[in-house]
Image (cartoon, rainbow, N blue to C red; front, side, top):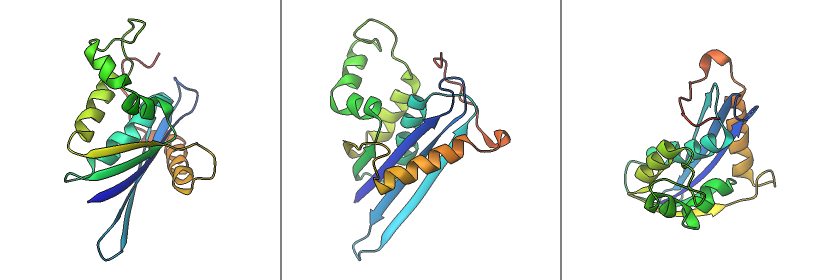
Length: 162
């Protein structure tokens, strides 16, 4: 089964403000019928990078069986980590950067690794705010989630927000 995923993340006042992610999952069945789902959630205090990761994680976690996935994101942080060997290097170096600092968002990278493990994922970077329809929609989902009523925002308990 081939699936397209589009994701984006947003944070206001990064890293101390609210943020959100948006994701679209699209599948065309053998009869040509398009099936699409959208996901979004806001958090009370987070970072843009954490929300970029969450969009990809949530979308991949919603796939119930192994798929061939084209995942599109405007996050170079996400795409470069997956395509340029950054993630593998961090894992080999016991979750340390090349500067020997702890890798930020380790718990999300682990969750992403688990979510992607059963799939064949083709990680694709798209330029943000450049008119790509699905990226623009994901940006709208993410910013709307970030700007939601504070009572509806989840708490991001990431330990490395600062």
